[in-house]
Image (cartoon, rainbow, N blue to C red; front, top):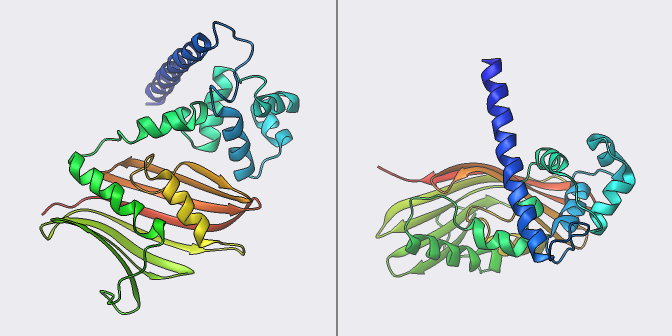
Amino acid sequence: MTNKRSIIHFVYHELIAKLLVIIYNIIIKKKGGKRSFISIKDMNFSKTLQQLRNHHQLSQEALAEKLHVSRQAVAKWESGQTMPDLTNLMILSDLFLVSLDRLVKDQDDCQKTSITMNHSLSNRHIKFLLEAKQNTYAAGLPENDMPSRPKAHDLTYRQGSLLYMDTYLGSEKFSGQEALWEDHIPLWTMNYCGKVIGEGFAGHFLKNALQSGINQNLVRGPELFSEGDFTYHCQYHGDMDWFQGYESIYYLNEKIYECFFHGGLVKD
């Protein structure tokens, strides 16, 4: 069993390495064949690395120690002067729990591709769900006058036979559910539960983070979003049919908010 796992692990990293070589070659072609410098214009890596390092409360020295490289090497990566080799890119991906695609590609490119995540919902349902998320909590939509449950916060979005509702209880500590219906038949749902765990939480920042990531991640927010002293981070596993994940917010490198979520298709 151990040998099989080792072989699978080796093959996985070999495939990732080949993928990165392809990405490198594409970037090199854009730069006219020059390998010495890759600018932030071509890749968002330097900015992403800084955000991830700060999010995990690591100094350049601490990160360098984990990678067995010099602090100067990390400084050059973050300034856009050089790029890490393939091995270090894979280590960074594992260390920060982000995909290689998110780590090395420009954010605009990620926005174009991530929306193609696997799902069984129709394109019409997906389009409606995107519009609903853009126009409810993330947009600051006023709550329904008549809540569905005592002291519940309800947000509703309708379009023809389609209905989206986000309903939750609490504020500092909260629990809720998002759901999609067509002709009164439930199709998809997501449950979430979270809490504010530190001072400095700003609801408008969470809304900005969710709004910025709607076209990247149909489930919640983007993998990484920063604004001022705030940093939002989100990870999930699965697809729209069946998924689970976790999001957090850091203020001045201290975690002040966290939320767990899971969901998928509904079928009788």
